[in-house]
Image (cartoon, rainbow, N blue to C red; front, side):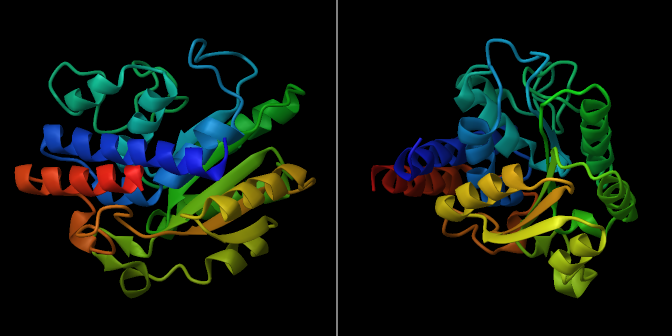
Length: 274
């Protein structure tokens, strides 16, 4: 895909996020929207996956460590063809397979159930180690939140990954600078994030996580890096793509009402047309 196609696809992913959270009357749109470009590049360009065969043995693996941003993950999977886009309207409804957090037992394309913050990276590290031990060539990608990396388990997993030289592992930090209680540097600052990962023997790349040129370059560099895992620190805008949600901490875990839904979808429709 070229950048125009990726931008158009990311716009559809954002529409799915707004639609899912609106119909659920709950959920986490802010961090889903900030990561939409990252999700899009991973699933439409970077990863070796097959929607027709979600459990294909040699597939690349993805772990959404910040599992509450499932609306973004689900919208990406739906737009990639793992299940119908229409099903996004059932998010968090009783009886729906699209739960509030990813469930590997019921959702096609989900490799790890996640959502207890801090734990996803450990699972991803285990997958990467298994790949090395079994001489498999699949790669493992893990998306973490910048508030989530305040969790100690993130750094235990990072220490192990660096020590084991897991160059088949890519950690992406969605650095939108906002968590549920406010700016991350005011709640419990993890900065400098890049220097911390470097201290754990990661190759570190800092990018604008809402710019497809920089995203493409970073994943290409990660693929070429040997002997150490890669951490991509992606500076993003929380609520990206919906004007009244951008950089507003209140949209971390709040669904749009009917008026807000129509305004958001109107903005995204105009953005897609542009």
